[in-house]
Image 1: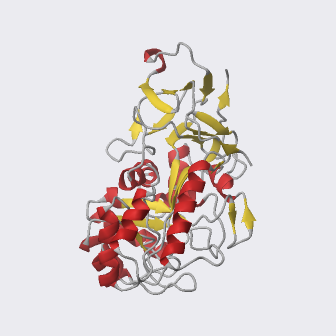
Image 2: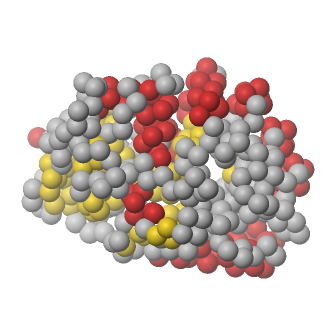
Length: 396
């Protein structure tokens, strides 16, 4: 397993011969650009190769006519310590997700730690430790936004100020701790928001010991920033309650791999019918009882496109730009000034689709030939996806 340094990357990267550039932006999901420049880990220019300043390039990647997409974002993971999960006694799961195109992860709570402290002092210490540790530790180069405490009874406003002052920017799933009532959760979510901490709420039936049912009434009253796994983790709410959530607020609609697929498609279609596709974001809700899913985000893109009848380029926006905007991240979009996180991929060999987008619309996963994080090549041909028809290569 390779672990990336946290030092600011230096150098100039050119990716050329891009056959299809997916931007991650719903308003313009496909660009006619065929090349992209990154300087010191940030996107510097996007356009036609002949128009770009390629002088002094340190690394040149030839995409060989394949597709380039912003690095995928997993909006819902449960890291613990290092690149290890006690849920499945598995190591290197984060590095394996990078081989599935994931370059950024958002913690929904480090709740699987054996003996997780539930007193206020302990949970704050654990959150700060996770935030610090994953700021300094990047398996496979993946950026993990961690340190997400779950709410416990007895927390007061000053606790949220302390957490924010210490660098904590997330709350773990509301409902996984002792706070499960809407009025109590609403008060604490408001304190968190006051100090710049984003919140996610558990939705649906219980997932782990200690969690419980969180129904639509509680979700609406708590008013968290993200309706976590609206399709259940694993057990979903009735479809009429999911519609109520989509219609009753404007918060992010998070659809996850480890949830109910019927509910996932219903939530997406309802959001689309409301004219609010920008609310849809994707996660895996893993590692969990069903394991770790390195290709979980790609599988969600293929599911929502293939069965949900959404253009593949739009489904990729759910996994990139939508999440970046909702989560206030500097990645996920092909825009000058954003971080240079890219996935280069193509139609999988022998797919029935005529090209990568058509193959995803038919339910096939693409083949990844390169992942770039902060302008640095982190892997070549993925060890997890089917082989791509065309393979990107470092040519200088």
